[in-house]
Length: 565
Image (cartoon, rainbow, N blue to C red; front, side):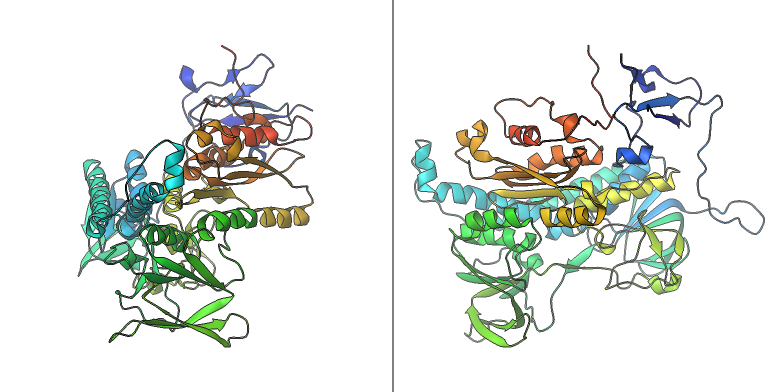
């Protein structure tokens, strides 16, 4: 049976031509450009069958979206606030929220107790990419076989440590300046000082400056997590904050943790001449990655390089180098807690993840209790108090809520919150948010890993299929002499839903977005397998991946059907 969905637009009955639905010859409708599906699957709109029709219906009278408003003052009139929106924290998440708030016409202030840009710009993803850019070039210049394949002869490559460090620092300074200037140019008030919540819709910053706002967003980010028993001196036992300064390159460094941070720094240090030892508490390296991708990455990124590893052990105690003695690391069995070994190295990098930066926020003033330091929120990023009730007009985004500790996830959450305070219902689909590890080659992913997908399938009763393509079959990758790589698609063969995509290979971090956008827009494999990709490009890896998938039947999402012109 043909199903119909009517969507009412909150606008006058006279709809501009560009916003009208386009009706194809088969009677189906194309969603107008102005209608955002917000990363929701098509089922959320009631589109269940392949011949569903979407009709955009203009109401006979303009309809105003009802916004949530603050309580009335004693005289019955709406209270007056200093700002429409206050954001505590000027990292990538706070910056994204502020820019979108200005676009929505909200009077906005952002409070920063340190420096604009937060962890990502100053002590994280931005300076680390500068170091990784250096390591990538060093690695290529040092690979004599690789150079000879191009007919190139290169003398021994060297580097200037201070110049490399300056490159990272200068990039962070430039991006920080760009972020600051972009907010100032748009009229965002940047307030300096530590932000503290005094009560509902009231914030203090600095010593005694008190301001009010209709809505408040917490965006205070995170700090490096250091387990008990580890003494960080900032010189020989360091966190990623210290490592990015590249004050010295040790001959032998132990990296505690083999996740994103540990892997990227192993790429940097080995390219600059260090030997690396990984210490991983779980039974395998790279535990957060799809297992098949992790095994391939280990074969390429770990085994051929000057890297060894200990798995299934904790670094129970780490003592910095002192008085001519090396850094000592006591390793205990992760299960029995018995001492297994003691390492003596030149330096140790603690890459065991990050912890939310939420102390001193004044959460006790609004009866909010953190969970392992994270601020509890619902799917709309609304803060939940100790009694399980929503705190009115208070939101928390990014690392501080722990839903997905990625800078771009924080920004997406901030934009979603601004949509809500502007009167629109918006829920962010976190399964559509990609992640990447900028090693050489890169690793990227979106959605579920294969074990996660199979666990979900078993609970919900559907089949899971897997398709794979190799970079060895891609012309552009072979032209670059970079054929080592794999792309993996995890999907439902009954309806073509994309459950996850994982890529290991040249420019994987750039390639993943075709898959993440497809998930965000609710596209199915049968919708995108006919898309055209320029030849020869790396994007054809994804093209071949989707084309190789076998979907039963011809079920379409009904979104974005082509119009013949």
